[in-house]
Image 1 (tube, rainbow, N blue to C red):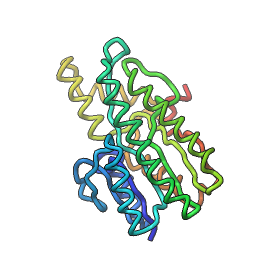
Image 2 (tube, rainbow, N blue to C red; image 1 turned 90 degrees about the vertical axis):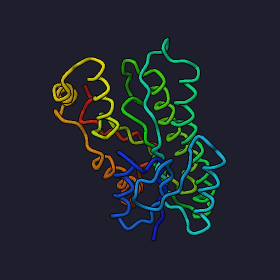
Image 3 (cartoon, one colour; image 1 turned 60 degrees about the vertical axis):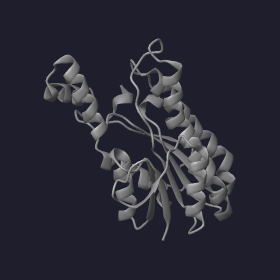
Length: 240
């Protein structure tokens, strides 16, 4: 049985990824702060480098690690003036340092096996800018770079690295953000939701299961010639 590690796999896109790999017959280890109830749960704060390293090392004592999906992340809305040094540090600690810790920890294990697939969850904001998204945009561009440099540095070990770049995906976090906006502004939620959908060329939001399907494909043998890529799944938004 192949083993897949997912960070941030207890909700939203991460939970769908965990379920998708289980359906593919993988042993799936979820590193998160809370248990999503699916897969093997390992409580882990990805901002703590040694904790991430220790958890992954313990998993590797039981089996090889075939796939890493670095998914844990947070969103933060603000322009550069309204982003404090602490805000910037928090976004980078979770989004970038968390991915760095996970990727760095699995590479020696994958090198020993001379194979592996690493998928890093970036965003359409790795390719384009959006308003009031300074720190988040910056972090996702950094993750795209991490995928590309890792792909080049470890191709000789048959280790592939790619970044997935979702657009607007209908997750619990999305609905929380819409609810908060409507409470502040008094806007009608259904109208705001439809407006978000209309911004996409396909006139709808993406679903977590669609992102998970792309991730499992990138981990599969069918994607064995794909590395160093930024895989956009955004309903055509960045093509405009």
